[in-house]
Length: 74
Image (cartoon, rainbow, N blue to C red; front, side, top):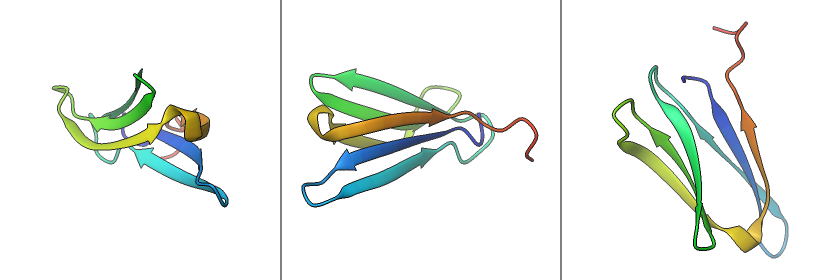
């Protein structure tokens, strides 16, 4: 749903880096999958076509936080 957001915190060796994947248009959603040591966060359309994808090594991910859309905000 538009406004859904996933925040990924990754250890890069020197410091922690934060990445955001956001559902940017109406009807899109953010999906998370964990396969073979790789965490994949994708913005997906209604039909299931990925629009943008971020991939991270699972061993480097410190936190993965899902932020649902705020119902009061437009």
